[in-house]
Length: 522
Image (cartoon, rainbow, N blue to C red; front, top):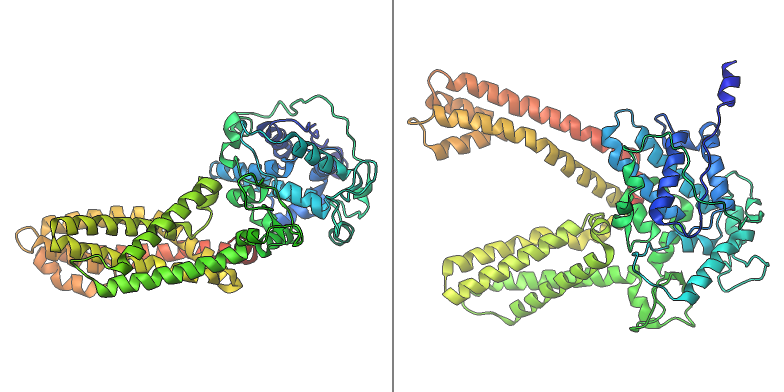
């Protein structure tokens, strides 16, 4: 009886999505379906099982057969970021499951596409509202998108076009479709659209207001679908084979965005043709750009050593002038990258923090150096070279960023990043306890021990030197010095350190459990 009742439970209404609907409206309609379809905490493997896939299959089928909106995959991945952002208010983890459901739907939808179609959807760039595109390009894009009617990049009449994927039949047979039927792509796509309407109006809207607001698309403007996936943290989606094929193609230069290095060149993803493409455009291939970047940092580090070893207090050497040009060029390049990528996507690169540190230290060194030379202040000049010495903390690791492409180091890097985040969170609580004990010891030692000696002793005890604290405790206070010191040693060396290590270890275990996704995400 229970089984019959469960089978009779109606599925959510599949939303109707027109080709010309705004991005935020598409995301809102999809969010209504996902919210109603996923109402319990589920993992990635649970959502892929046949039991729970039944609720997502109607949406996947409709998106594959009837919807031709170019931003459909981008909207699903943006929803992943939305559900991830509101997860902190959800104790049961349902919103995290809804985010994973968005990744599952997006992945299954991509599996129904040919190679050329997958390229168009995954590299579709969300334009700003005031952007205007060439009418011919729009028409060509619409024709190619609707060419999905027969699933191999042809027009609805069946004629091959320049967008026809050479390997589409092979990839379709290899990857299959959302429901496991290899010929599902051959179904004729319906071009009729019913009027737009919101479904599931009974769902409260306050918790999910961001999915329907006009500002929902703002963080993703000028980002393509893969960049939106990186910003949203869609690691499961990015780790799938069909997605990695596109990413590897971009990395190796098989997929390019520019055909010519001219002012009038238009950014458009396509497969590289060495007979038609401009050879100079190969300079934009990520693999080659990474090689140039490492060479640049090697020269940068060499100039840093030359300037630091020369340490000319009175004159500006030729090497120092070249060093300033390197700093200025690097700062300009980072600013251009920030403007092009946007703040959200720029922040996803863990090495951005190092780059900002290199620029800040170089700028501070230049300012203090110029002021010191202008006023002939030897002390300020000494400080400027001390600041320059900090450059090695950022330049040396930055050169070895190439190691992040290795699976071992690529997995280790997210672990270090997660460890740093957890330690920073924990430091707030540690700082409160430390200030409380430091104030107590400073007042107890007043008139007995100098404040400087007290602060150094407390700091040594905090970092594990408990024996030193027991030696000086009677001098701080004959009566309360030793009891307070015992409490302080127990709190710092036993309770706080042990708790922090256990807390960080739990976070690292979660990262290592998904080591492959973390490596591919880096």
